[in-house]
Length: 433
Image (cartoon, rainbow, N blue to C red; front, side):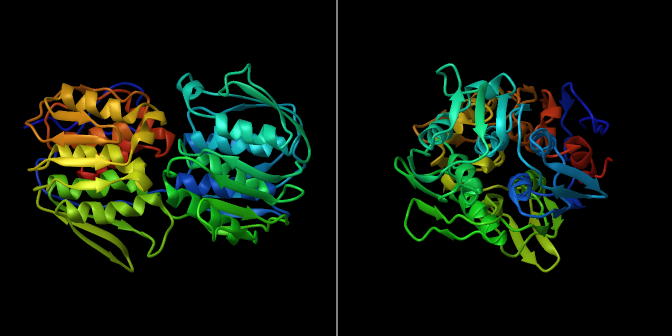
């Protein structure tokens, strides 16, 4: 029987993934959504009065966003489990650490354009190769001065003048929906408002843009998204927020997938009946792969027998689920094809190459296609799974470890990017906290 590793909440080294030696029976409370928390933080900083964010996520990405906003004049204060956000006059000089957070490196430059003074940006080593060009070029088109040494990437400096005229931007946002969201979030504060038009290949992760539009409307901003690939934000004051942050459904994905992979039942309380979160798609995906999925007033319940079906699925709008879905597919009884996810090559790492490489090292059969992966199940063996500094890769490796003895996860602490104490929560899932 594989050993039961001890739980640890702060682990910077490699971690032996727990093996499931029986069906699961667990209730998992998932912290707030990273995507919603960081959108609410930006809107609260731009609002006309103080806001209360109830039960926001506190992880590396959201703490970096809060620190970034503080550095340009916003007061973000802990009030128990909540954050009280008091907007102030935006100003430099400031230095912003983006870490590896796409939301920070893309949402904050438009905010910095509204600040008076110089705001410098940098981040982790891999952050310097993540796509930034469309946001920086859009701001330049609107008259914002930016110094980036001609790289269109981190590090760069925004020279804010305290106001932006606004107008119309035509951009190719096919590499990331965050390019559109970054501009929409601040558009109401531009003198003329903002019209954003996407021209290019289909936008990835449309639910994240829907999330941004809904958050803006919750803040009293008028957004017209009636025409395809076009968003019109009217100039207006942004109203303050008093909002409870939904659980992060993408972070819930490995936990509910565990019920299918290991057998048994996993419950996630407070799963929303309606949401713009892309992670909600995990319900239909797991159902197609053989799970019994039920959403009720008390939350989501997922049950499985340990037998997994392969599937052919387009993950274009929900790419962040790909590593966990790929891990489940590697344990299936038939082949799977994951499509529509070419844009994942520009995420925290090249996720398609990383998944193919690591599954192959474990004995699996995985090929990259132009826009995705083909996974043919093979018997897998224990091995160190490299995570490439990517939290989703670490979570996917934990799913594999439920069925494959000897899986060791490299640098499991990278999960702290979006989910604090992943190892403790995962061990508790198996009753080993």
